Length: 430
Ligand code: NAD
View 1 (cartoon, rainbow, N blue to C red):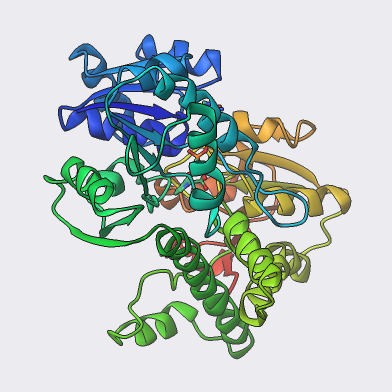
View 2 (cartoon, helix red, strand yellow):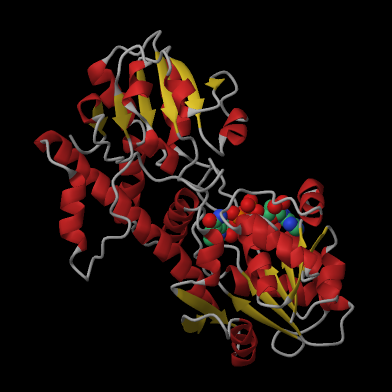
């Protein structure tokens, strides 16, 4: 099929490359000129495993192309995926300006078409948005009628950054929220050779499934971090407890890895948006409010633990890992942001290293030192905090610790160092 993707970020680019690899002809549109230029030159604008290679392959096979022109991309395609950002606003609700603008631009292309066209909302939007905001824009701007002239589906994306391409190509499930059966059938065709279960729902249910999924995952992490705080007091290892809980099939072990708190572009935005939406509907959100509170308190727990060991004022502290998780350069809502802020407020001298995310962090924390390796960040430091569990941090040696002012590593992520054990402390384990 000829597919246009509007919004070429983590989701749009991954979906675009993934669909092009399945022999669809894909045009990825963005308003960011640099991104479009980079993609057409074969340069992947984000860090994601295997994405650059497959992107290059699909571009050279002439299956994938990037463009700034939404109208033309829609006019010359059969299906359009809306993948623009839906960022969080101060009051917790989401900002729909990007997606409304994308829908208006897409309508320009639809207006000039005689054939039936499919629109697929992939951006995360609160229940009712597709029906009450997107469809009315498409109808009003074109004079065309949903169900007659164009179809609409809401197809939430569940990919995890750091594993985006594999998650897109091999998902646990595909949820198709459909305006009508015809729309759902067309979208299901695109996913025919994806070996997974497909769940077809109403538009609103699909929208809510995305929010409820992310909120439950965030809840699992906040829960295990809370249990972890108790483990710390009891001098036991929260990972042993998580293994014991996770063996129960009703629970499963996923998302029970205690750490410095959850972040990223999705969990904070989505949990807050669901809380705001529930409040608007007059529904209590006691569980989710506590989930957020627990996480906010937990994010700077590493600094608290560090202060049990040393007075950080005037000390050099190495921060290993800035991305909100390994495998990505994304730092949005990363606990590293709050940890660095807290250390700066306490007059510590921060030396930071991350294999992919330093450029992004420099936009937020300009005034700290960035180093070229973990070893360099640790050299002469009074302590090192592990915030992101990048594989390369497993390779720290006693020699790296010997180069420190004081050999002390506080782990926000469990690294299971054998030889360094006596010099390491865990956030929620001994
Ligand atoms: P992103 O910020 O990485 O990318 C969004 C892109 O949309 C940007 O490149 C931006 O320039 C572009 N854009 C904005 N307005 C546009 C317009 N009018 N026309 C064309 N392009 C436009 O965002 P993302 O992380 O890819 O997320 C996109 C959506 O998918 C969000 O709703 C998000 O909640 C959801 N989502 C994200 C993830 C994730 O892990 N990042 C996972 C699942 C769902």
